[in-house]
Amino acid sequence: MAFDVNQIISYREMCNEEAQEQLQRGMNFEIRPGYSVVLMSVKPNAPYADRISDDGLAIYYEGHDAPGDKNKQLDQPASNPSGTLTQNGQFIKAIKLAKKTGALPLVKVYEKLQIGIWTYRGLFEITSFQFIERGGRRVYEFEFRITEQDLEAAARQGEFRQIDIEQTRQIPGKVKIAVFKRDHGQCVMCGSADNLHFDHLLPYSKGGTSLKEENIQLLCARHNLQKSAKLDF
Ligand SMILES: [Zn+2]
Image (cartoon, rainbow, N blue to C red; front, side, top):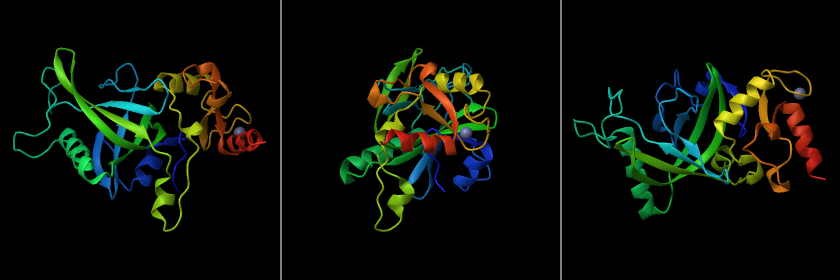
């Protein structure tokens, strides 16, 4: 079963969904047929400078350092000394190939909230990359744009489900971490700690923001569904 955007999941649920024993690397090029998986973290000690766009529809994901470059002195490499491509290089190659085929590579993005607790950010198209100056060296920055497509529904023949773009507006990781703490990791309606989602109190379309924790709360699946049903009328 696919996760919802903004659903909160355990590390084990994430690994099971991606059919992996462990997920330890940040960038996992085409770990599954048809898509890659990346992990992000915006905690203060996070190693990479990932960010989201102002409209909440894109993520700018920093490439990864050369192995052992703990002090971040080297330009991020696209290939290994042996000549094989690094994860950066594989993502770049896929973007360049897409310019010919027109089919952009897909990536699923997960974000760490706390040890063992993750949230699903959604399915994105990898649209472009830049090689930019940052901290006295050059790093890759990949642009991921949210798709309006449900991967599993698309994979099932003859079925296509559009995802409500409203629900895919990205919430900054710092806001998510603060909300999770404030709401004690429980649904604000019933106290359930199962199947939690980040919910916008006031939807983006009605002027609500993703950027302030005052407009985000934790809801269980049942209360999240109840609320979206009400908003439809
Ligand atoms: Zn609830």
